[in-house]
Length: 394
Ligand SMILES: Cc1ncc(COP(=O)(O)O)c(C=O)c1O
Image 1 (tube, rainbow, N blue to C red):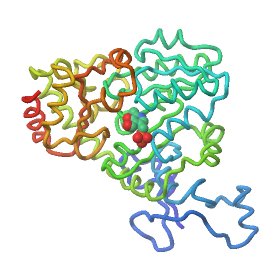
Image 2 (image 1 turned 60 degrees about the vertical axis):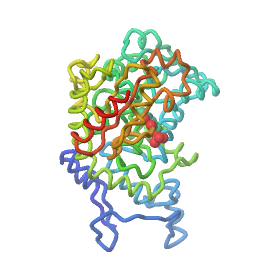
Image 3 (image 1 turned 45 degrees about the horizontal axis):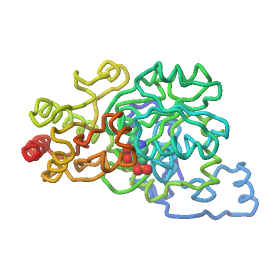
Image 4 (image 1 turned 90 degrees about the horizontal axis):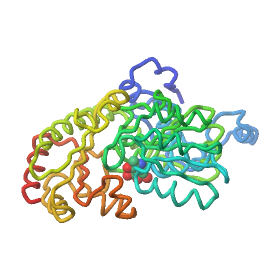
């Protein structure tokens, strides 16, 4: 196999690296990356097999540990990455693997429902306490820190209300007590935000979203330093088994090649849609990172390179009006996914955030009339017409 190692492409800009980094070519010299659908690997001799197991020979061993197609995907993520079966496997591994009973975690309240489950319900079962804070209240982060705080966790922009948290400021607070900051960067995408360069220590993605971006398969990614990956992640993944399948890695590799084009086009359309809907008489609140009226517009400017493919808005008339709007959409599909080339509308209160109490949803601004819109690759004017027609029925 010949390799275009990440090191050989490291001087190129991200768009170029997302097309070329990590390529491993077999003896056939294929243009497109090969899909290595294999569970295991064979060895020339027992000595070579032994050397693979000791690490003296750095080849592949077993696809739960690593696989050439998965390795290509990991290296194309630009930063040092480990791939997992789903985004939740990445989140759970990044949070749980480094912790021990007696440790403490501080997390923002505004999290995707399953992430909140991991922090709020799962960790305490293993003797790891957690404190939830209002993500953009830096005083609350500061006050929540304890000598045994080991990890802080946040997502920005948040799912689904698109609040933006000051990543550099929270990283400073975490580091002041020796804790690490883990950021779920799903909504920002690697195109618009690089939490590691803002001071975060670990970044997690659901590759299911924009990285695939075409609704096909699930995947997750953990990005961090070599030290963190070696100390906390590598062995946990190897021994517990939340591995990405080679097939999914192949699909996601091809997704990375068009990620930048897709996210830029989707963001441009989302900005136009947000502007078109902002003054709509049936809408009581619209949130779009990238508009000057976003509640944390100054932080958006400071830490993001672009807006978002996502828009949040609240229709007047609560759940009934929101359901009428969803049901009247012709082009955008009702689903609980996001980041797809097909536009998607979601009612978070009855889906992604359904397991929260009504009080917890109210605290996060997830009202019964709140709708999350994931902008696809359709023509923006068709989407604006679809939304305007649906809002007539709200
Ligand atoms: C912000 C965020 N993090 C993590 C996940 C989990 O990803 P997956 O569905 O790939 O497990 C999601 C899924 O919707 C999400 O929106």
